[in-house]
Length: 95
Picture (cartoon, helix red, strand yellow):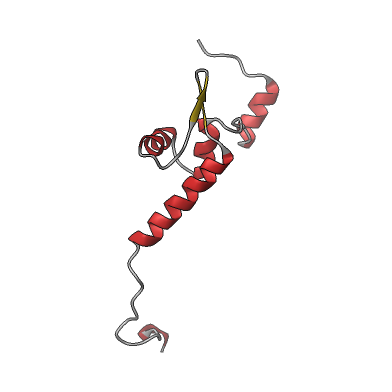
């Protein structure tokens, strides 16, 4: 059964301003820029720290920031160093 949306919530949804609560997994996924299943993978992989309060699964702001920094470091290490093309720094198409 679907719940009815108030006119205010309908307006927020149209404007794209539906908010997730700080500390929720939905909020963490929004901050990191990933889906909830990907967020669960990050938690299972030990890249994102989380905790429980009762049945609620929570993530701190610091844990989100640490996870983003870790993902950025991993991404930088995966990229090969940029090589200079054989014709030098100038593009042959620029002439």
